[in-house]
Image 1 (cartoon, rainbow, N blue to C red):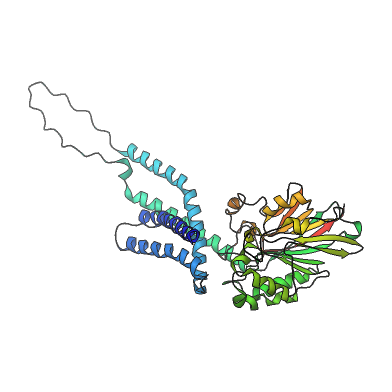
Image 2: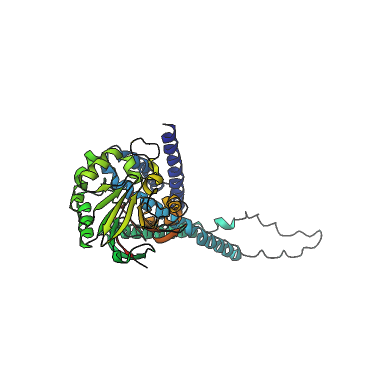
Length: 414
């Protein structure tokens, strides 16, 4: 309970500070005292309250908050980034204006000599000095408005592009990954990989149907769904997930849990996914016998499941221990960071998701602080790791720089 209150408190503080900054740059600096400034202040306050209300309300069934709340979250993010970037050129422009103001002030004329004892002209009245920064407030107002308009139009344009990308069809990518232990007879074995479908308030059955159709067109040997299928309970989203029953593959379709399954009733979802025909690999390993060779396919629970009871966290020993080391092994693990432990068991390839490829540039830079690989193929301690961008989104229905993706992983023999 205390941890939840702490999270809510931290979220409220951060959201409040961001909106205070946006109010300063977009309202106070661009308007004169009066009605419009008051309207802008009230709007900023309402939008500041909308963010935590959306995050809490969508969890409580208030799904109508999702579109306005999450769209504003994306706009807020890009407005913040753009205005912070503009701080430097704005500072330079203000310094230039100040310098011009100082240069433009008339130079005081030298006083005429006066004879001692003679009656001189009356002393000129004292003139109050004008602060250079206040010399021409209209110019500073124009500068602030120009920056606000530029940031606003750019943020709206980028967000609109991101919405179109996020709600569009997933990009179909193919990647060839050589495995040293793969038998020559299994060369070309294909694994259709998808993650982060994120069925929820904004994505429903039609989203699932489109992904299933895309995967089936790949004619894969194996289908791997590597976590974060849902953002809601089976009662809420069971119908939206039902098209998964139509997945086709030669040697089976497999699923591992992601962190969002643990927020959505993981035990019920494990049973539901199994009912839909996907085999759930909960710290388990299966043998894929194909084309005269054998490959080990293993799966581990997500790291966020640690200490949650029946569907506990990852158990690498259970999934990878006591196996024939001469066989190649492919591990399904939702988060790329699992490769740090998986590498200790000689995993040849790990297939992961979780990162969304960063979802919203430049947020991908922050993801690198937590995960060793954000998108694509990389290596962790000798284990190859492929991270897919995922086919859905979380939070804002926006993707910039990381399009939704379904990947056909083709295994190649040396």
